[in-house]
Image (cartoon, rainbow, N blue to C red):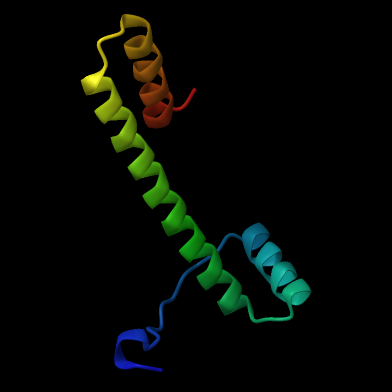
Length: 85
């Protein structure tokens, strides 16, 4: 393992329900709970990055749009992304 990839010990408290689900996933995947937690965190980070990219793309389209209907639709989509439904 390179220096850049060296693990950092981190203490995290999980709700009991989440901990049970993590252990169950680890058992079915035949891996450790720590590995499952890392995979879930990495997936979550990637999802956030995709969401941010999508938001910026929509904002750019809104700024370039001259069609009132499209502007309204894009504003609504951005509002849902920001505040939920």
